[in-house]
Length: 250
Image (cartoon, rainbow, N blue to C red; front, side):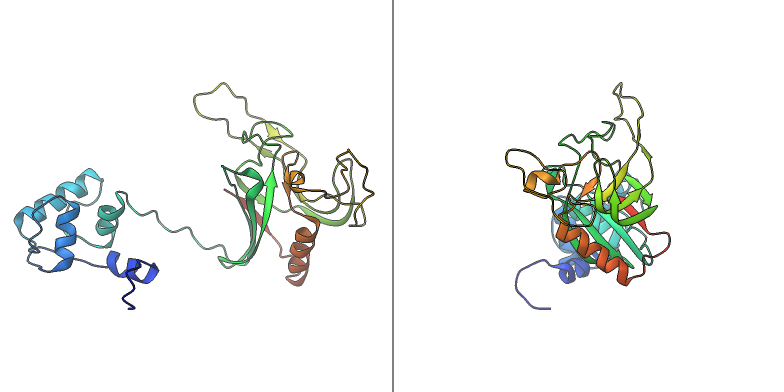
């Protein structure tokens, strides 16, 4: 590997792919001993083996005293690496919430686990409470796409829109929140029924015209700019709108 001093994916994989056991010697053993606050002599002896086993037991791992990839990762990060998520085959959508800056959340089009394109997206009116009816964030979970439109004519949502099923929120533990079933959930933008932009009325927030970044805020849905939602539709049109297309919200 290139000796650039940067621990990238390849270097990390090499580090956490090691296995050292009693009787082994070298730098890898020293690395284990440093993590366990032992004398770093590079010799995997009885004391090192006992310390490894104690560490594994503390982490609820198999206490065999052998430092394999799982133990090495726990030593370095302080936690056991989570199992990788199963790859969703075919096309899917993923909405990743930005808890610090909600209007900088992200909607991605994914195929076989690979992100094809991502767009800036928003959800809710600033409240991160999933149980705030009509204003809160879209509740986490999976949504099977029910329908899509390019000429929707609704009370608040027109033009390009993807309809999602109703979803029951999950109240925060230890609170007196009530479970609320969220309805009228869409991925949409601000536009006219035919996908254009309405007339600009000064000093007024026009529901059929995208004016600025404040328009990423929504009544509990997911919002994209007109250009971005049209790009999403173009890509899904090319994929012939796969059956069972699912949105995953995290």
